[in-house]
Figure 1 (cartoon, rainbow, N blue to C red):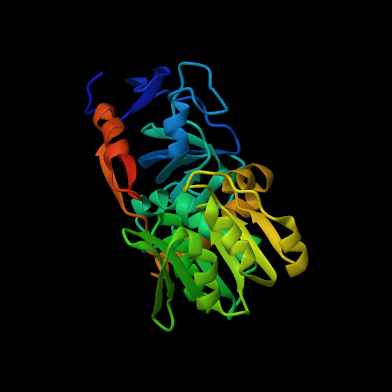
Figure 2 (figure 1 turned 60 degrees about the vertical axis):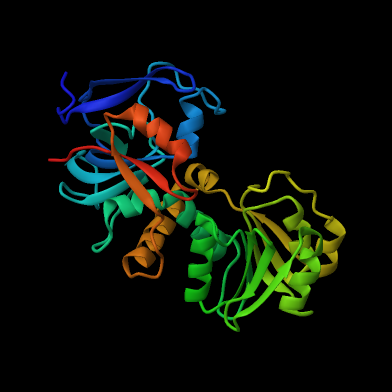
Length: 332
């Protein structure tokens, strides 16, 4: 086949770093009654995909297979039992293997409409970070106006989205970012700044927050940050465990949780997708709504022609931190 043919897919034929990826003619299987066929405009290259094609993920699909979990495009056909979607609708499919293809069959219950005013690339590039932020703050932490919210790693993709969501909800927002001079702590409302060392993060948070402490601590960082956050939780405070970007997985002193009546809350959108699919799609739709109205800024991203997978593989490792790499496909 020629590379300008729209009906193509990327096929992983061998695990590796880099993996063996072939461009093949896309299959056109019959549509199931609850499925839709999507003309893919762009698909995300997620960290999970990066592990999957190396054979380093916990699930190892049988070779050969078409990778990709998140795609955006337009519906071109719907199954006989599908309701709520029709040909021409702009949608995102999330968690459906096979997204690195010009045509994707996805179950309708995994789809979310892309609202007017939101570009498909902006939507699919922001799923991992923005949905994590939304699920964590709104669903898991029960964010309300007036809550004191501390965001660790506030300059990262998840952190930035958390700051925007918390500000929109009327929370009092405090941020922690790493700089060449140490850790910068900021009270965003009062424009108060404190620079501390890792060893004095606990004391810096206490100076910033006062004895009242934080109602919610957003923690995508782990390591030494976590205990400092727990020690500065308010009564009934919630620590959101999102990730461990700083390296070590911390051990939380549970006696502090007891004394504060506090909670450690896990935030895992992959689990939400599997365990509560309808909640996953509802929250994604609500998150897209915030993006469409300008409350949430889409994650930085860049789109590369899907046929140029060698370049895409290299760019995944060299792109600026927080920049999502997308695979571009032609659409009708």
